[in-house]
Image 1: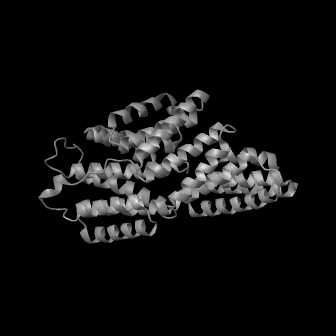
Image 2 (image 1 turned 180 degrees about the horizontal axis):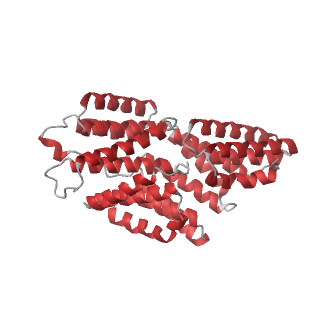
Image 3 (image 1 turned 120 degrees about the vertical axis):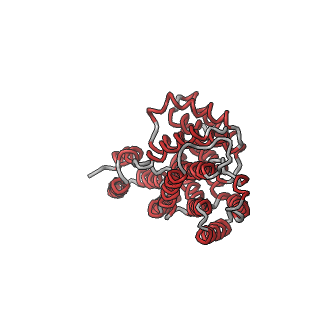
Length: 371
């Protein structure tokens, strides 16, 4: 069997090197071994680690397992006279990510701030992870300036500690924030800094980096370069991707980017027309929207975004009835989740695409933000 200590070592690494089912198996082995050992500290640590790791998987069963493990860890911690600050921090972090995926942004902020406070000085790397997760919450609410400040702070801290993983996340986060602010040249500068670390990229980070560069070049008017990068990113989505929350940013940004390019491709009078046919652009956009839809089936956050992107896709195809149904579903989902930023974004696009198909086509709004 796998003893508790060995199981605890396996959990952080098995996420990257095994599939979802194997990871569940290793988690259950570690929990079982810790239970058999009879050591409450070890068992609480394992439950906290499981909750922490599974919280970032964008699947319903993973979130359910994360919530179960978090509740078990809390019940043990509350009975202990002394508890590990780091393990409690993991519980707050897991809760924050869970709230993010279900669009409860205020609670997500609250829980992540608690994790940051617990990690402060005791565990700088985990503190940075919680900080950048908080920045992602800001991104999904359109608060790019706040997100940028957090990513920049975390990036500087990571450089001082030679924390390569956090350095990569900091650069990608700054790139996304700059794009949201319309600072496309600055986005390209920070994203190019990742080149030295690309050998250490996970597939999700590779997809996100290419997609953010594609959005930045699109914002600067270089549609051909944008298409090249977006197409490469789309091909990469066929590879196994790690299921952390950065995958949410990557797939949403990719769908938005290819829809931008499809819209440009349909505009005969655009100053920088694409050499690629509308049919090819439509096919690429459909693939990106489908990948987003596949991811959204068990993630409330991505369900809203998927509905919006698919509605925009069918609006561009001038399939008005289907598009109208999807716009309505997207708006209702955003309202149900009380996601004000996304609700306003959807309503804005509904207004813009309601007259789609006439000579005003070249005046239509084109999404250029990553989140």
